[in-house]
Length: 290
Ligand SMILES: [Zn+2]
Image (cartoon, rainbow, N blue to C red; front, top):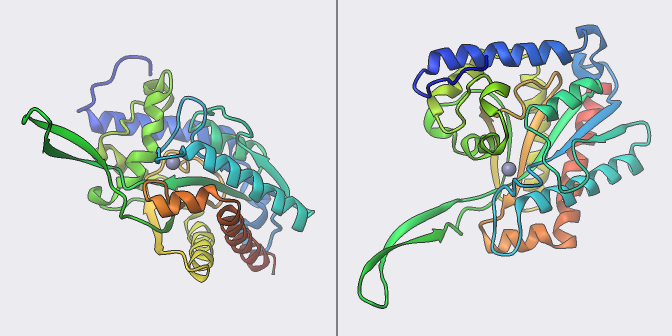
């Protein structure tokens, strides 16, 4: 698994990815009869909260803030709220400081702790576009313009959608490119190549239904707080691929939108987001513990 893999060799890299993820998953999965809330009857005992990005990986960058910092602040506040209001539930974080755990290490930690939920927290970005403008000397130059119009919240679960709809997955999976030895760790998977994403459709979808349920509760809460609801989406996300429990990645707003960036940076905005996420988790918990 150590040799260089050509990017165009997507079938081979796909098989490598499946083998690699299967090994990771097998190494950290727990037996099916010990899966807490997954049966619909168990208790939610442990929740892993994963603040997106960190360290050298800033994630999306707004005018005044970085995704990694907002994700960490909201994650720590969410964890505190869970510990305070649900004292029987243990919270485990993938990071509590500005460091970067590799994407595959995050669900592996959740598997190790036999977690009942995995929640990854991120900020969205409308990205930037290029336009040709005349400079002061009358020459045309390319200028990068932040797309400020996109806004709202969306929550993602592992799945496969058509290549053109993988925009968030491509951006979030790009963190892999900043990791050392990523060819080995992800079996030659190329985060920039949408065609290699099809391998995720072959992954087990054991926790799909419950993941969608939790994601839908989150979006219901955001909508009730008058946030724009972009819905629940299935995307091929490396950070969710090997989680042995219901797992979601929630995009709590667009850092590229100045109003939403201010909201996500403010104490009141973070309080609102934390309350929405907590209510969704609590609704899910009551539902599976019923
Ligand atoms: Zn992100």
